[in-house]
Length: 253
Image 1 (cartoon, rainbow, N blue to C red):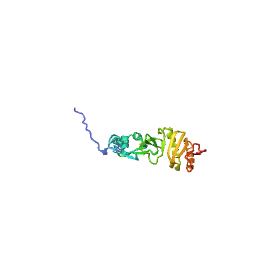
Image 2 (tube, rainbow, N blue to C red):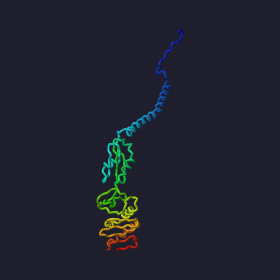
Image 3 (cartoon, rainbow, N blue to C red):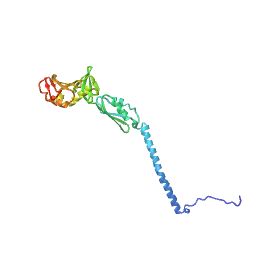
Image 4 (tube, rainbow, N blue to C red):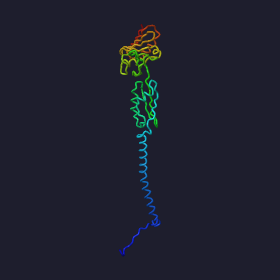
């Protein structure tokens, strides 16, 4: 079309832009970069955390390679590992420590259990076994009980160094068993060395069977420390039966 104007886009030289405008635009770019930087850092951190979490919880890279069992004597490590029931290569972070502890705790000889992770790939199970304090004769065998009255082991012969407890049904909830353990815990060292068995027909009928066919009539388990002191003082006296059931009025036969 004749008479029209021809327009052409021309890039202006930077020198054509005033310095004040250039400084303004530079500051604006810096502000935008500063505003975007926290978001970029946060996104990077999230990606990093997500990746690490996936590696730890979702893959076998940090899976269980070894179960380390500490503190067993009656048990062996394989019994504890079997009770723990931790699958090979299960992510160590996903192992249910409380569940492992409960399953191992169900083993009769186990008193306490501590379970912990040892990175990168080991599960450590620390076992404290029960401490024997007495043996209960049962059907030609002996049930070993701990200080709480829990029967946790059956053996054919009386364990050396353990006194006998004669009760019908040993258990931590059995009153006769608990009475016998109360008496045993109160004995002086000298008297304990003489005791072969504690016989409990009922909580009020407790007798100590001593060496040389001697007997201490204990009565119930109250005042056991006083009864122990009195019985210990009378060990050198002649007589087959020492009655301390009423420790203020003692009889010897």
